[in-house]
Length: 264
Image (cartoon, rainbow, N blue to C red; front, top):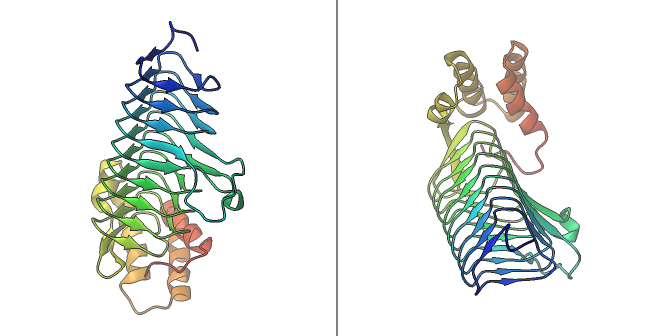
């Protein structure tokens, strides 16, 4: 880096091994460690800590006191080289914690592009997050969670380790998710999270037409509103998909790949 290309507050501590792109801004008392790469135009707020190995893309914003790239909270971790990879255009708010991966879990925690991760959220080791997601305050992912694209986690939602959340799903406030959530679903809290219909309003906002939404609703009824066993419901989803619904095909493919029980 050069003095002309970045704006670093004089109280910030930057390891000589860190690499900062053009136009990066680093706030007061921030600490950036060895093995950290920060892409062009990214802003790092006061008192942030970024540990490496961590690679951060362009035009991200990290607000005050975020702790990024810390060691995984895993007793099996023995200091092996693991990393965090963050894409472009993300907003990370105050006191968010995002940990690096583990050697046994693939070695990488990965966050895509244009996500909003709001105050006090936690993203644990080996999580994979897609693009255009919103995590409201205090939402928490345990280790090895996979989150698709356009997913919303409401405040205080929690996701059990190894669970998967499909594209366009909506997780309601305070929901504790302990099973896989297929694409397009809206989930609300009882003792554990239970399906409460599809995320129709979110789908409309993203341009899904009435025909696509009708097919997804039909698939939801097959899975959740009758007495059919799971194999029977999957057979009906296959028939809907065969009639030309790529969305239902995506739901069925998601279910078939699951390692945890389906939220049902």
